[in-house]
Image 1 (cartoon, helix red, strand yellow):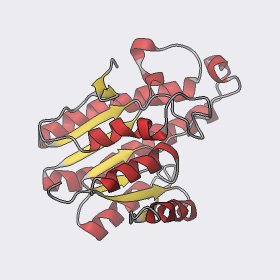
Image 2 (cartoon, helix red, strand yellow):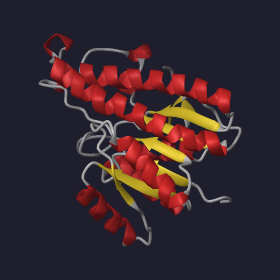
Image 3 (cartoon, rainbow, N blue to C red):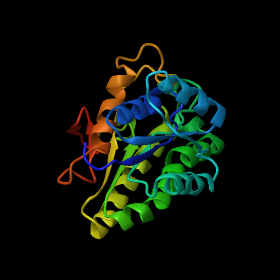
Image 4 (tube, helix red, strand yellow):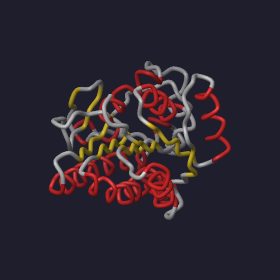
Length: 240
């Protein structure tokens, strides 16, 4: 790899987020692990240290409106800039019934909490990281979305989660358009990791965390002529 890049990954103390940190670090990216609970983040960093990967940790509670700005400011303080942002943190709290859960039973509290974490949190992080990317003329923003948010295949079940991921996809398109007008080398894309064996995905999911993280890492490392404003699974574009 040429120039050293500096990344921030949210929701990274476990699951897909932790694996994204691991894979980026192995590629030589200095990757900061963002975690709601700094103690859990520290334990995750210790597990990576046992693999020879030194990973800084920052507190990043996506429900705290001021936390994204503080986290990005800490990355910039430590390294001078933030080149890569992976918006991985997300929640799935729909219920009861899972795939049978109905929008007509959805509480406004569940919808509000889901949108706060899954949409407003990424929005605040993008707003915080964009000035550094504009200044350097380089940036990679990856929003971890879901096929559950595809309008082309929208159906019932998990209504709050589905709506939040559709909104995250819209944010991806809007941010990509605006940032491309500033610099063609700032890329913003969304990724569907698939059904992954994590605390959220459950033990019956058909993908490993390594597989779930791979496309996000690919998007984080796009070359200068790579795509922007796209939605990807397994490194291939998929319908919105």
